[in-house]
Length: 214
Ligand SMILES: CCCCC/C=C\C/C=C\C/C=C\C/C=C\CCCC(=O)SCCNC(=O)CCNC(=O)[C@H](O)C(C)(C)COP(=O)(O)OP(=O)(O)OC[C@H]1O[C@@H](n2cnc3c(N)ncnc32)[C@H](O)[C@@H]1OP(=O)(O)O
Image (cartoon, rainbow, N blue to C red; front, side, top):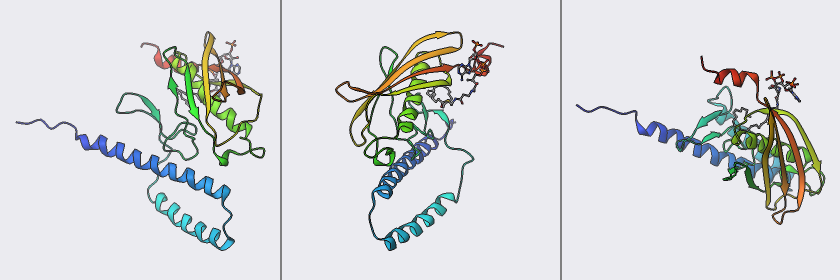
């Protein structure tokens, strides 16, 4: 007698579908940049809009209730494919790819796109703040103090360019009870800091309750 294990192709199918969705999201990011930069004729814009409406309808054919949530990948690493900052399957996300250092701090190499423009030739300050919010949240999480943003203080020291390599880093600095402080920054590769952030992340009481042994 043979014992059938759960079909491996289920997980492979799910991974292949996620990979396809990530590729679609990348294509949509290119599309968004193309939209903000295009200078084609009005008739062409109208024609493309009609084609996109048809494509949108095809994707609407089967809808989830919410974007993809936190899950464990096949490698055991948590991922959040639908996240607005890090989600590979969310066209709104850069996506930010965050590494954890041996010192339990975080770093991410990143490059903004024309779609992030605020002041001419400059990344919108709110976009920089969003990236730092998430990076700081990840920094407290990898230090062992996961929480939600209570306050986020940003100091803009220099213009943030798009289309150029940048480095974002963050580290947990201290905790008192459920309050956790963290510092971070976005800098040029040479080290010049363009945006500094300090955050207070609160571990929700509900999360503590969930971890309390019954
Ligand atoms: C996006 C992921 C979320 C899920 C994460 C799951 C797992 C984490 C693992 C990995 C995650 C990795 C990276 C991503 C992480 C984060 C990045 C995204 C960050 C966000 O995008 S997150 C959205 C914006 N964020 C909110 O949506 C918060 C709304 N809010 C609330 O959900 C509650 O308000 C809460 C939970 C904050 C507190 O609620 P609570 O009931 O647990 O605690 P309580 O009110 O008792 O406060 C206890 C003590 O903190 C003080 N305190 C409270 N709030 C304060 C504040 N704002 N400023 C200064 N101090 C504050 C009190 O004054 C008291 O201080 P004291 O003890 O001295 O009196």
